Image (cartoon, rainbow, N blue to C red; front, side, top):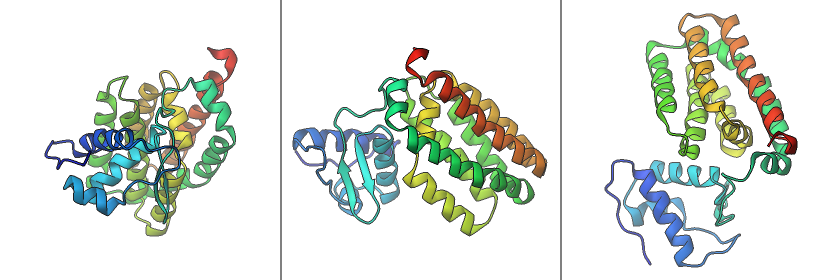
Length: 235
C-alpha cells in the first residue's frame, strides 16, 4: 500500500484514515516509527499543518505517540479513546493530577490577561470555536477533545503574551490527559460549552477578575466531574 493524494475538504480526516490504513497494511507494531511529517505531507500532498492536526487526533485516540524531536510512533492499534473512564483514569491518575495542577497555575492568569488585551477578532474566534464544539456529535469524541484544547489555546493567544503562549502550547502538546479525561466524562462537553460561553463573555467585557474566576471554576468543575465519574464505583 502507498498513500493517495488527498483532495477532500476536511484534509485531516482523510489523512487520519490513510495513516491508520498504512499502519494496518504494513502490520506496524507498538513502537514502530511512522514516516516524518514532511514525508507524510509529500505523499498525501497536503500541508504539514494538516498532517500535524491528523497526528494530534490520532494521539488523542491513543493510536500513536508523538515524541518531540524524535518522530511519531505507533502506540496501540486499538487506541484507548473509548476505554471505560474508571480504567483510563486509574491508568493515568498521576498525569491527570499534574496536568490540572499546571493549568490551575497558568490559565486563570492567562484568562485575566485575555480580558485585558483581547481584540474583537479574538472574541470572534472564541465564539466560533464554541459554536463548532457545541455542534459536534456525541460519537465525535476526538474532535470534541481537540475543540476543547483549541478553545484554551485561543484564550492564550488573546492574552497576547508570547512567552505565556509558548508555555501553554508546550503544555497542550505534551500533556492532554486532563482534557481527554474531562471530555470523556459523561455530559462534560455540554457543560464545558456553557462555561466557555461564560468565560468568553467575561473576556469580551474586559472583566479580568471575572475571567480569572471563570477559568479557575471551569477547571475545578472538570476535576470534580472526573473524580465523581472516574472511579470504579461510578459505573
